[in-house]
Amino acid sequence: MANITFIDQSGEARTVEAAAGSSVMEAAIRNDIPGIDADCGGACSCATCHVYVAEDWLEKVGPPQPMEEDMLDFAFDVRANSRLSCQIRVTPELDGLTVTTPERQG
Image (cartoon, rainbow, N blue to C red; front, side, top):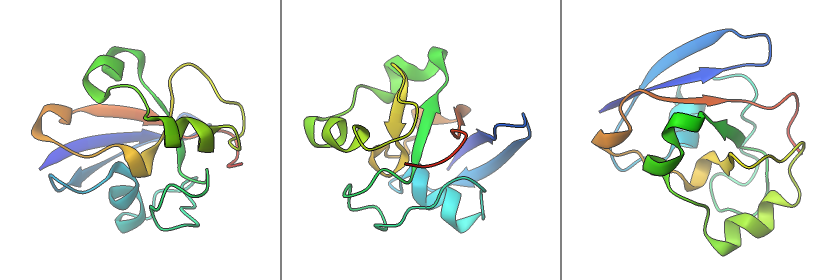
């Protein structure tokens, strides 16, 4: 298990437990995190689970793969630390991960 903190645009933080092997998106959906729509259910075919990874976690999370980069083109307000939460697999090393949801999903 890993604790993941989701911060919304108003600054409200919610920390949830996520099972190793699941995705950050799945943890968000299971815990009713606002701002994560996940229209495609995690198939990396939309950009509605877009998050900003906290700068100090970028190295541990790793860079997006080419397919994810292509889907990020459809996201709102893409930044250097943008990721699709469906593509971030939870590992014990991600315990304490912090992500922020964008103002709106693409």
